[in-house]
Amino acid sequence: MNAHTPGPWHIGKLALIGLGLIEIGDNKHTKRQVILDCRDYSDRMDEFFANARLIAASPELFEVLKKILEYHERGVKRNTPILSNYYLNLIKQVIATVEEIK
Image 1 (spheres, rainbow, N blue to C red):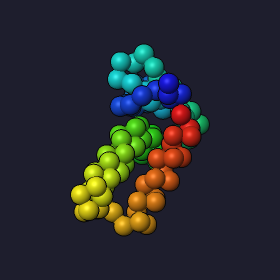
Image 2 (cartoon, rainbow, N blue to C red; image 1 turned 45 degrees about the vertical axis):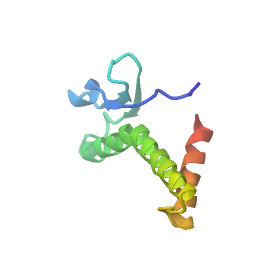
Image 3 (spheres, rainbow, N blue to C red; image 1 turned 180 degrees about the vertical axis):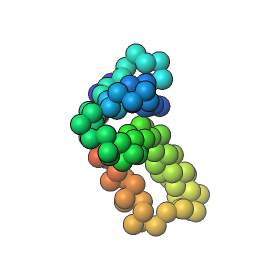
Image 4 (spheres, rainbow, N blue to C red; image 1 turned 90 degrees about the vertical axis):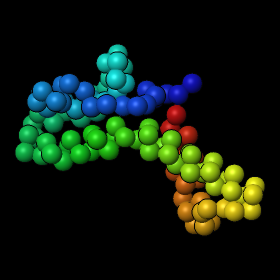
């Protein structure tokens, strides 16, 4: 079982209506988590929204990395790998890090 809310994640209404609380979670609004309280930093809201969008995209980005790795491994079986060892190791490192967090 994952310890995090499965994606896709979306930025919640509290942020969109200007309450200064940035939340992310599933689209059903049943599992949302406030990730940032920026009520005292209204001058940095653009930065906070950019960070929230990046965090909300994390599950999708992780899935893309896993698909790239799967595609590479299929290529290895056909003797046509698509990644150099450098990029292969980077992707594996990111996947291992995320798997540890679960």
